Image (tube, rainbow over all chains, first blue to last red; front, side, top):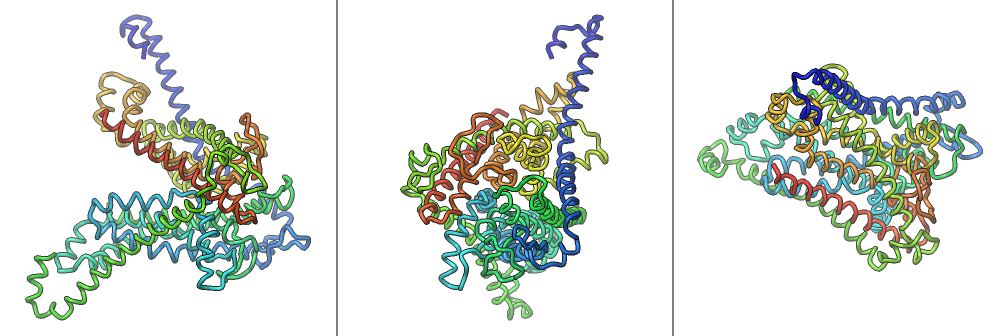
Length: 310
Length: 297
């Protein structure tokens, strides 16, 4: 900057300044590139960190036991390493979350995209987004101290259970499902809606028979991403779903998800390099692989959707 | 619509179903409203229940005391200091790196596989569960870099976690700068960096700041990755430096929630009100910044 002001473009000094400036520009570009490379390095770091300890884990525990055994007792004297109780618990709470979030989220999205006045949408949408900004530990607290006691009035429920954790998790992912589905529906070309109205259809008919089918792949992407969020969610299930690895799909009893296991072990003192330290990474790898597949599927669906209408 | 139905009513074929179809439309509208109402009602229920439980427990003593075995004496001092320490370092790392990465992607990177690869990576990182970042931090920062279970290790972990949010927000802010500004600067002979430094960044600043505040409010509520790297749950001291051990508000709330004595539910509620209060302040700040700075252009 100041260099340019001082130097006349014709002076012999100017050449030197020009080179200095080029060097500076090059250095800045290199620094910017390094910053962007952190993104790629993080992915590599995650895979490396998980992979090393997971391989070490499978040297001590057979992979066959990991995927066929139905008991998970790595911290007991009789150690069993079957991932299934953790997987079923994760699956159970996530499906309950979807049962809450998909109908509510889709209806909210249809309403905001097809029925609501733009001014109503401008107010309601940010308020709904607040649900996504609440720390998950707060949701966990709510599930354990408010929702579970409330549900106990109606059904026989343990203090820790998959049901209220799942319901609250559904509320948490509601904005994700609603917001992404709304994006998908807003992207449906207006000509399709107008064709529907032109044939005499009313708003509800256009919304459910024209717009929703047309936005289906985008909606599917939203649901899959919501599922992925629920699978990876930690504090709600760690607080409200219990810490008992059980091979069951009963939503009323204490269970233990993959994420809860990681929290439970982390809260204790696990020596570096011990087998229980490595179980963290074996469970983490399973979780990462699962969410990775879901995220890729969601991403592919969004792309397909964008291609259809761009 | 109203005009259309007037003509339709005269037609023989439409008359028998028109009532049903109208009811269908009304019911659909009502159900949509109910769905949104249900979401908002849950939010209200959560806030009211927690707020009521905190009444009488959230006082000066709570903010200035350390944790205790006795609910009446328990306070959030260590957690508030820990949160401040961790957040300061998180922003210190994530803001420059995130903004620079976005500048690279928007202003420097040539179109091609490398840009696409970095972009996909960042998109994917945004949906990796936060607890996986905890495992990354545990292995890389706590073990390999031997930072211990310190403020620094926690901040680096959270910085990676929020990096995608900052990159995406900054990219959007840069994209919203009118091309004419970029062209005018280049036409006057400015270099790429001069254009970025003097024209694009000032213009995109409100968007960048808003994105960073949103990223910080995500980081401030995170507990799972910090538990995984081994942040403490009972801390009777405040951190004195970046290599000290620490706790943060969400972990302290988690800890209180899991204690047996019923009165700790009230202590946890008080902690939640403090945490939500900080988040509310930050988000209002974001809105304010956006509104105040927008007027300059």
